[in-house]
Length: 96
Image (cartoon, rainbow, N blue to C red; front, side, top):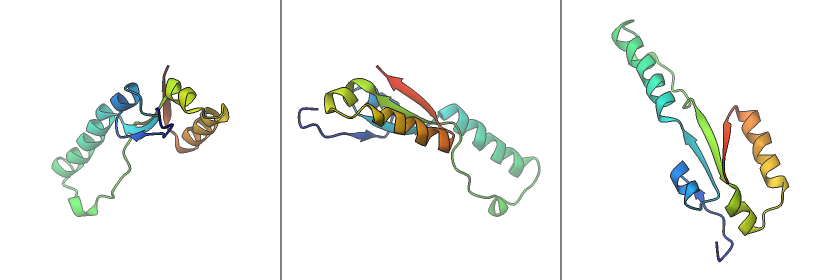
């Protein structure tokens, strides 16, 4: 923060500790997605090689608004993040 360098994090916890932004996947959604794939393999006897790779479900964008203010980011930064998240179907969560 002193150097005014934004940190893009891997987890929501890191955003709560002061990182600017993180894109994360919800563990419960990922587990449900994995369970559906396992069911298709075990119950429906689908060949695992025939299953397509899927992007994770339940993704969220986390932003630390206090960090954004300290970094002096323009007010439009949050608006652009909301636009991006909406276009990608992501939930946006803010840390005050």
